Image (cartoon, rainbow, N blue to C red; front, side):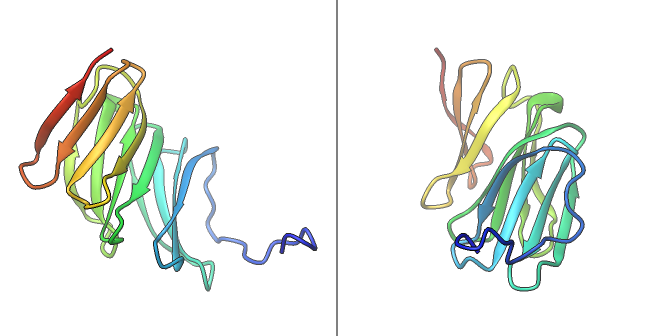
Amino acid sequence: DVEECFPIRVLEEAHIAPISECNLTPDDRRVVTSSYDKTVKAWDMETGKMLWTVEHEGIVTSCNISCDARYVVSGSDKGNTIYIFDTMSATVVAHIPDHHKSTITRCCFDPDNQRVTSVSYDKSIKLWDMITRSTSVTINE
């Protein structure tokens, strides 16, 4: 509650390191967070209960939910890797190691959920195609 400066929902099983990003699903029913504790977590906003955790090998620098809320993309500093997983089962559907030459700082879906865009400390922008499962565009400095 903003007026009372009082939390209206406390999420259970919180991260144990700084949170790098958070996103609400389009229907505002779930929130997904990424953290330096090497995890991505999802919670039910009504109950505050954690729905799932996906562990990564390195720090998770970014996460984003697709516009249809079917997928989550995350970027990890270990191996400059992109992960895409199903939001219902938390199953990894794509693992893209060495996607960049340096740490991924942000990743997100395009509005049609067909591509994942990522940016990195290597000063590049990449678009990864969900259908062809390959990098379709690379823009370097």
